[in-house]
Structures are given as structure tokens and as C-alpha cells.
Amino acid sequence: MMIATTRAATKEAPDWREWRRRRAWELKQAGWTQRAIARALGVTEGAVSQWMARVRAGGPEALRHRPPPGGRPKLTAAQRADLLAVLARGAAYYGFTGDVWTSPRVAKVIRERYGVHYHPGHVRHLLRRLGWSRQKPVRRASQRDEGAIRRWWTERWPALKKRLKRRGGRSSGLTKRASICCRRWWPPGPGAARLRSSPPR
Image 1 (cartoon, rainbow, N blue to C red):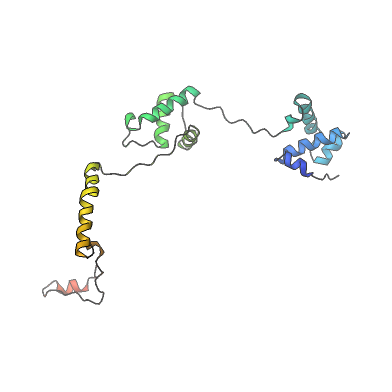
Image 2: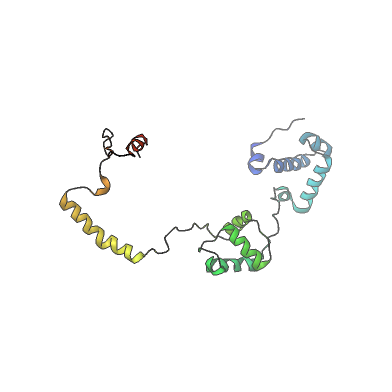
């Protein structure tokens, strides 16, 4: 026997298994036997019996889809809060080169501080749940002088621009490419033949 899927039932139950449990309850209320319900929905009588027991214990809401519980968190709530304080101190504080936290570094700190082993891939998920964003290293020269750079942009660069406008020319960086028709001139000598045969750079 085939059962038509009602539009209301599918709207209420996004998961087809949940729809099947709800439909079983509807048929039971309509006076169907458990055997007939099982045959119509393509399940065992034991499954229908379990669904009916769930309804008796918790009402029709007990038939709703329940996501499976995740694994027990390895770090306690207090340890997770402490981990945020650890990360706030910076990676250099814990002896790493460069003040950037990476997943392997965080996994190492967790292992040494709390005695809990985390795969670096799982550390990424943990940090995302804690609201810690992924960091990227800022690539700067160690001898970089921010003050000198600022002064160059505010003082030297405007003066260079004015001088360039007065001349009406372009900067040396915008010169034209050399013509490809020009031939190289090689000075006479024993290495001239070898130089002529070498490809131009």
C-alpha cells in the first residue's frame, strides 16, 4: 500500500526519517495497526513500536529529529577561557619565533599546559568556536623604520612630485623599452666570437 506524502507533513518535518515517524503516528491515530503501518512505511514493527513508546513518553514532539550529540569536549570551560588568555599573550611569549599563532603551535601549548592532545586540524575548529580568528604573519624587515618611512611620504615624496611637475618629464622608472632592431656591438678580441654566440639577455 502506498501513502501519499502531504505537503503539510513535509513542511513540518525537514528530515524524511522524522516525516516517517510523524506519519506513523498519524496512521496510528487513524486506527491503523502497527503491522499495517510497518508494511506501509517499509519499516519493522519493532521500529513502529519504539516510535509509539516515544510518543507516549514525550508526546508527538518526541518524534522530532534530534542531532546526535557531539563528542565530549576535551578542554573544560575553565581551560578554554584560560586558553584565550594564553593566546592573548602572543606566541613569542611562549618561545616561538614570530608573534603568530598557528594550529600546530596552539596544539603544542594545549598539550604542554593541559595535557590534552589535539590534532592541528581540530585546533582550527576549536579556535573558531572560541571566536579566535586565523592570523597571518606580517612580512616586514626587522630593521624597518616606520618613522623614517612616514617622514619620506610626508616630506620627501611631495617635494619630488613638485620637481617632476616643474620639469614636465617622467620619472626614470617610466622609460621606454630599447628598440629590438638595435644590434649589440662587441669589441674585437679573443672572446668576441664567444660573446656573439651567446644569447642576448
